[in-house]
Amino acid sequence: MSVARFKDLCVDVSAVGPMTEFWGTVLGLTPPADAAADGPVPLRGDSPAQTVWINKVPEPRTVKQRVHLDVHTSAIADLETLGAIEQSPISDAQSWAVMEDPEGGEFCGFPRDSVPAYRLMEVVVDSADPEAQARWWHGLLGGDFNAGEGKPYSWLENVPGLPFDYFVFIEVPEPKTVKNRIHWDVDADTLDAVLAAGATLLRPQDDEIGWSICADPEGNEFCVFLPRPEDV
Image 1: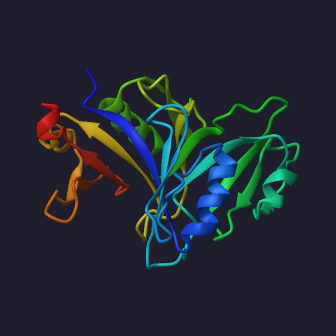
Image 2: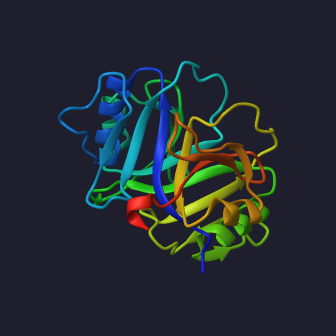
């Protein structure tokens, strides 16, 4: 039995309006009609897990993002029309293009003949030890663990409740230096179980926030939501 369950994704931005429009269109998600100008804005799909929050933060993007999204697209040119910039084009060596969103955040576009309504394919996390990271998150979320077998990545698939195909951990040489601009939230029955699995508590739930902020073994932030009293 898994310790936690995937809840949703969160993207930190400097300008809420333009980034809400960009990511809503790229991912095939819709903001509420009464979305606040300064956020947070939930982009929603057909299921609760297909939710991506656009959150305004004061700090700008300064380094390569340690977490990025891989998306299905009908054409790379469509992403460029929305304001993305091609950083590394499709080639014989890679079947995807590395892109930058309007604020410089990296993501990858995978052209498809048929594009699903919800276009998030996978979440990719830079890691010092991708196999250890994948095994840790497998222990927390369940699903199927896959080792890279000599390749510099490991991944999870068939994770219960995960609204995208793959959770990928890929080896990089550089260490984590700043707060991630993309993170995910999980639901859990108890915070103690998450901490016992090896998470670090960065900030407990208090009068200002209704969740606890934790970090995985390599310092990637994620938020833990516990059952509300009325749900118990």
